[in-house]
Image 1 (cartoon, rainbow over the protein chains, first blue to last red):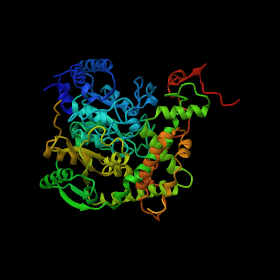
Image 2: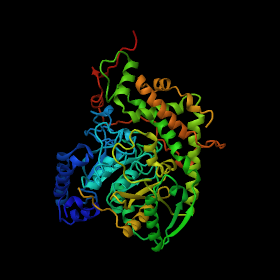
Image 3: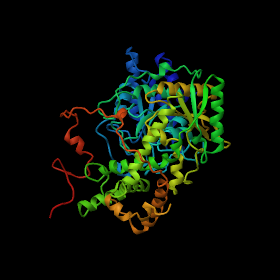
Image 4: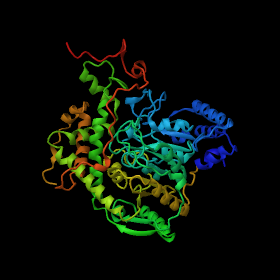
Length: 485
Length: 95
C-alpha cells in the first residue's frame, strides 16, 4: 500500500510515531497527481513546490519535538472558491482567471495554523453553480470510478481528488448539495456543516444564507478530523455562531445502539431510482439490527423545496455577483466605450451560461411586481420546511435519505437541460434551506460499478451525533473502496 | 397553470437590470429555459402566513469601529484591471 492510499487519521499516527515523514507522504501524493491527473483533471492550480516546502517545515518542527496538531503534515486540497493568499483563486470562472487574493479565508488560516500541507486549488462548477463540474470555464473533472462520467458538483474537483488519491483530504462548499452530491458520486464522505458552524470569511459568496464550507475524506473519522479543525466562531463572519461545541473526532464511538432514525417517505418517491432507495434501505436495516430504532416520518413540503431553493439561491447570487463589474478586480472587456458598456460586456464575456441564467432568474424574482409572488413565497416555504425538520428532529436523532437520486451520469448528458441538472439536488437542497448539518456516506455500488451515497441529516450544531451515526453505518457497510485507475 | 406570471417575462429588460448583454440568438434559448424554470417554481403553494425574523439565526454584529486590516493599498490594487497613480481607472463617466 502506498502512502497516498492511507486515511488521514492513520497517517496522523504514522507521522506522530516517526514511521513516515510529511515530505515522504507529500511526495507520494504529488507523484499520484502526476500519474492520474491527466485522466481526472481535479486541480486548477497545483502547489507542488510550496507543498513540499511546507512538508519539510513540519518535519523540522516534529524533529524539534514541538507539539503538533493531528492534521500536521497531511496533504489537503482546497476548492477554488476559497481564498488563498498569493495562490490564484478563480471560482472556475473566466471572470477571476488571474485573480490572486491578498488574504486567506479563515478556514485556510486554520489549516496553515494546524501545519496542514496545501496541495493546490480544486476544480468546481463556475461560482459553484452546477451539479457536475461541467460548467467550469477551464475544464470538466472526471469521475475516478468511470472517467466517462461526471464527479458530481459543484465541488467535483474536491471529491474526485480525494477518491483518486490526489489529496488525502479536501475542502469544498455546499449551497444546495455541492459537497454531499459529489461525495456520493465519487464514493467518499462529505459533510455539510450546520449553517454558522464554519466561517464563510474568504469563501466567494454564491448564496450567503445557504453557503457553508465543509470537509471531504475517505472515511468518517477523517471528515471529523478536518471538521474539528475548521469549525468554530469567527468574528469576521457575522453569521458565525458562538456556541459550545463538542470535538467530533474524540467523541466517535461507532455504536448505533439506541439511535433513533427517521425515514421520510417523500425522499423515497418518484424521481429517485429504485436501486438507490434499496441501497439506502439495506443500510437502514443493518443499523436496525445493530440496535437503532427506525420510524417513518413525513416532511410534506419537500416537493416544493427545489423551487424555493432556486428562487432564494438565485436571488442572492444576482446580488452577490453584482460586484464583478471589471472595476476593482477580475476580468475587464477590451476597449470599453463607456462605463455601462464596460459593465455589460465584462459581465457577458466573463460569466458562463449557467451563471448568467441564474443571475437573470434572480434578478427576475427580485424585480418589481414579481417579488411577492416568487421571493416572498419562497422565504415562507423556507420557514415551513425548517419547522417540519425541527418537529421531526424533536422525535428522532437523525434522518436518513438518499444523497443523489441517481448514480453519476455521463459527461454531456444533462448539461443542456437545466431542469434535468437541477433534479440532481432534490434530496439535498432542503438541508441548506433549513440550515441543518448533513453528511453523505458511501452506500454500495450500481451494476456498472458507480458509487451510491446515503445522506444522514442531524440537528443544528450536533455534528457529533450525525458523524457517529455515519461511522456506525460505515463500520457495517465497509466504506470507501479505491477506484481502479 | 392558467395565467402564468412568468409567461410574459421580458428577458431583455431583466438582462439590462442585471447589466448583461444577450444577443438575439441567445434570447430564444434563454426564453424557453426561463419559461421551464418559472413553470417549476410556480407550483409552489400559496401560504397565508407572514414572514417572521428567525431569532435562532440572528447575526451577531460587531462594533462599527475602524481597524487595521494589514493589507496595503498597493496590494489591494494589484488585482485591479487598470490603475494609474494609485487609483482605479474606469471609462469617462462625465463629458
